[in-house]
Length: 238
Ligand code: 4FV
Image (cartoon, rainbow, N blue to C red; front, side, top):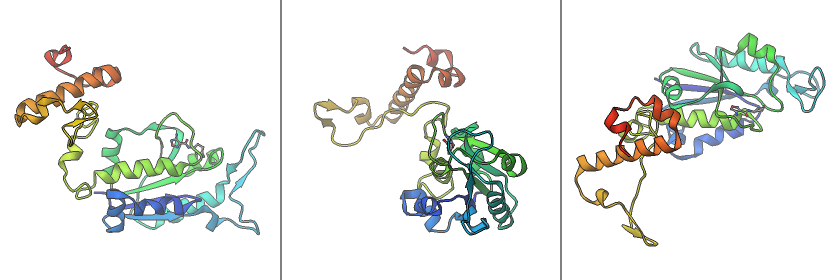
């Protein structure tokens, strides 16, 4: 079970902010999961303690220098049980709920956050075991991506959500998108809650929610719908 997360970042304050926020924040604040930050700038030599430099071959922007970053990664690795080093990058494997479940099952995560145009590729070759992407968009740094991963993983740590059931009923838990949710009032701006949800007939409510999840998945994510291995009746219930 996950007990520690180490983040290599030039902006530790960005990551420490996670402690303050919501359920996942409380998991860190309660010490259920330790969160540690390692700043390459603390390992940068010279008067300017520079952590970035111009790209070989020219082009815009800067690249994170190998040595300070490598020393920060190595210091993090030595600070706890052995763990795979992950780097957040658009070039990584797309993070999905199956991956989140697997990451939540590990004892420790070490996450490298790039800035500028990225990190020197030799650090990836020498010290990074896996690369993760939170989606085909370009962020200003790996920290927002690490925050997405950390939040998603912490939700699955026992005791964090307060009622484990909700993790099981999550979107993607059964490979489907989630059903719609409603709360009071029964009628809002002329829009009414579907009567089935007021029926008290839990079996019928469960069937309705699953039918909604299947239909939404079919319309919005045909890729997931095809993968969901639905039975014929469910597949064809239009
Ligand atoms: C990213 C993503 C991402 C690229 C250059 C940081 C930025 C900058 N990370 N999923 N999408 N990273 O855009 O993980 O260094």
